[in-house]
Length: 456
Image 1 (cartoon, rainbow, N blue to C red):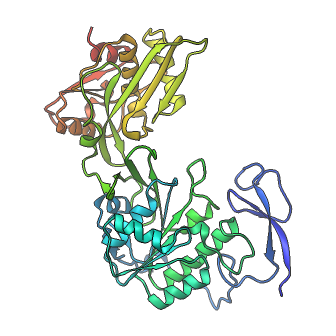
Image 2 (spheres, one colour):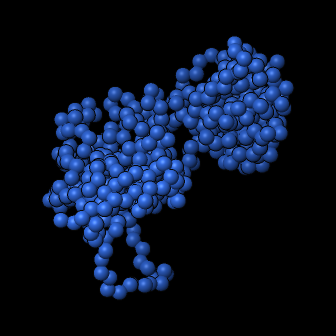
Image 3 (cartoon, rainbow, N blue to C red):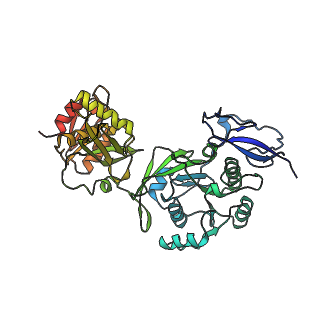
């Protein structure tokens, strides 16, 4: 029997050390090293495999033959958009998201609609066959080509793949699978790294498309070593609030396509339903014309969406004013409040300010600054902004309205949805190369924007 030795592994990046370190020299994380026993023998498989090479095959880059990758349509245009046209045969895709966000539901729906060369093997280490069958019944899935394997041993999974020869393999989830070659608990850094390497070698060798579901940490990143994301061909995240129905599928990495695309879904009783026209859905519940409500034309990847931003400004009942933002970065909200007070002469230091982006969507791009600032000013003055107005622009610290990218696409989306006016940065008007059927108003400062947007 091989002797075991003790090493210390960083729980954040997987860096190994022969002694405990307070700070990881690779990723800079503090108190991330934990003790782990490993077999003191030569590694024969996985990332650290030692093989006898005969001769290095060196080629000129221009002489390397390229492959035309075959893609499988998933049956969902929103997912195909994020993947760059569909699942590439033989690719390894990592799907992450918070618990209950809809990962397993979406994967099971893909298994029902995707057309691959061979059966589909669904490997689950978390749920039993009856639980998967109950979900399939709820989703009205009755597909003879889907096979289920409730197993966590990598050797048995390899055996099943060899026997069934599937065209698509689902691993739900990678943190529950273990390899007998590593004397560590499932979900540990070394196990996740080794198991992913074995899955990659098995499926790449047999040209099998594989989707891995991964847990996420409290900060939203995939649990386990970061090398996991480097090994796979594509990394997808499902984002959204658990108590809202809308989900955003975003690509963080894609070797076969762009990472600028997003897919929009809605979680319903019948499963994850794609939304082809998000703007219509996001603003459909807008009623009346209250103060503090503004529509912003934001970009998610290459897609333009109209989203409602709501603000509530009220005198504080305590010594220090509260600032709360849902769907908006807190530091950005504080910055905009300071600009409004300094550059627009709005005394907000003794006012509580609350900002909410409806439907659980998160606004990250600076182009939403103007809409947030206008909603705050509208609520403070208790004067509504026209419900037929859209605002786009980045707000600088000096109060200037700065240019944004792809303004023409935003104007076209506002025009398509029937809005009558859009406020944009004056410096960005030159981006519009056509004559729109909507009033386009250019502004230079936040004070000018408030005067244009809020009726007196």
